[in-house]
Image (tube, rainbow, N blue to C red; front, top):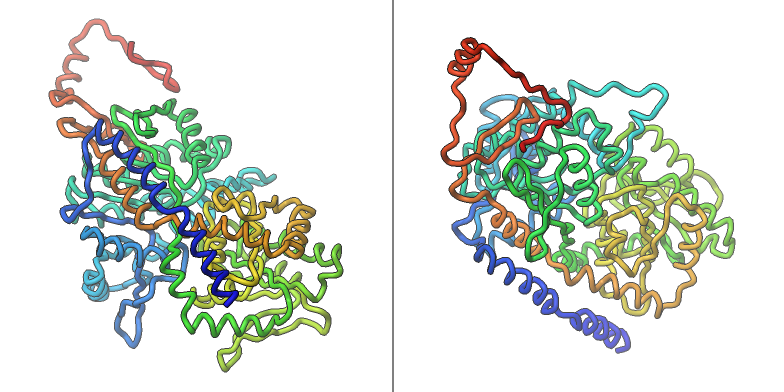
Length: 593
């Protein structure tokens, strides 16, 4: 009975702040915009093309033939994208077509045709880059762009800096062009094209070359680097030009948009402009490129339903049985240095040495997995983690989770080295007491959101969340304990606080986080971006010409009566002239009067 009363109180607290307040703010903003530009609707006449590295469905080859798996690929945001896209299709009656790599390489035309036939039923269009080019492209993204966008510049700052990867850059442009080529034949200027993440920075350029008036949006799911880091890139202008070919640019947090604006000012000399309704943008070659700040929203409602399934309950009980009577600190991170895994292990060991009363009462369970995204080979890091871990978590022949200890002593840190599915991840979070995140730099980091959702119905015992101040989620999850992962003492104190905190304090902090996670709607985030992108489309009655060479080409707005100078006429006039004046520009010193 007490438990039901407690859950009732949580439910009332969650519904106390109804979406009506958020809707009031949104309606006020939209009223101001509609007064200026009229109403914009996303309806049955709208077609949206979603362009990303990988499709939200996975193709697999079984028994010599290809099949499309029902579940989304278990990586990045794909577990959330598929249900979100399907929900938007159903509620808005909008046609959404996803374009990306299907997860397999098809070596023959017959195989490609078979995969295309399977995916057309899922409203997906596959892209088949040449295998070697794709490998070079993925390597360039992983070893260059990923660290750069997280402000890691070690390859330039060492005693023997590496030469810029020209082959990787060429592969990057080529693959981006292939994605653009997959979009253009199927789209019309009235459609919406939404391009995602740093893998696709040049796609807007290649689309706008062939469709100057295409309505293109780009959303960056990572941080944007500081201007000091970005200005050192040999391809800084090309990357900015690629992004600026879009009509709207999306960022997760204002700090990332601000870093972008500073880089644009220093590199391209552009100042931001502001419009009524709270919109910010950039005037670029006669076009207005809009900026939007809104982080990806975690699917709280859908995840709730999965958490309450018997499968999650069974696996969560399995984890609890292994660590019965102990406070379980957990985390799941990609195996790269940006995840701050070694500092985390070091801090937890120090926590147990400093507070010996918790030895044997608190453990750290770390799930980690290798990924194509990461800026250095994981072997050295994996070895460092293995050295510091006391035991491994593994699945035995019967499918049960078991502990494989390295020695006979007390085990404090348990390591699991494999990619697990979402059910296992939710079960781990459901069974745990404290989330410990020590990311050195992360764009959003959905794991704290998932942990909070896993404990949405806590009643007697409440969970705690420790997050790095360098994770984007720390800006919005105000009920979390924020730490500087490089300050070991601070992490130790945070662990101590999580152990000693009263249930009432935990409940209050957890409720603060839960309110934020529960109230945000992925559907509204998706719809809001599309509406603003449609509003940012290029206006009727303008003419756009592509000016420049190579990757630096840019669309420039001209008057309807603009005509290009005939080359033969110019050359003839030049040869006949007695006096000739040549104006040479260096770093933008010439400007119109």
